[in-house]
Image (cartoon, rainbow, N blue to C red; front, side, top):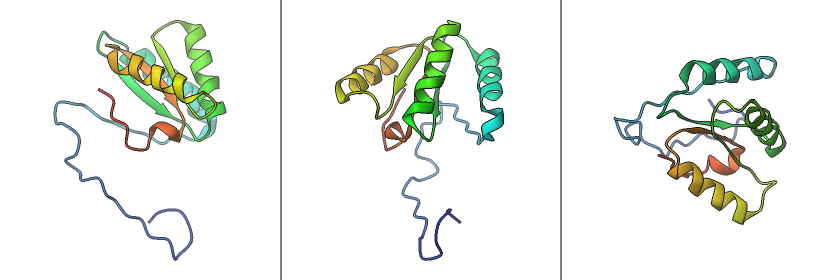
Length: 118
C-alpha cells in the first residue's frame, strides 16, 4: 500500500516487463543516516567503463550536495539535474548523461517522471 491517506489508491501504470532485458536494474531504499556511506560503497564497488547509475533524492538541495561531493572526489563523471537548475541546464545535463558511457546522475524527483536514460 502506498503511503498516504486511506482514500488514496496506488496505481501502477508501468508493466514489470517495461525495461529491456539487457539492462541490469536495481534499487534500494536507504535510511538517511546511511545514505552517504551506502552511495560511496556502491560507486566504489561498481565503477567501470560502462557503469551508469541514477541516484534520486527527495530534494534538489540534497541532490546538489551529493553531486558536489562526488564531483570533488573525482572518481567518476557526475551529472546533476534538479529543480534548482534552469530548464536549459537540466536539458543539457540530461543530454550529456545520455551520451556518456559511464557516470552517475544525482537528481531529485524531477527526473523520475518518465525520462529514459540509457
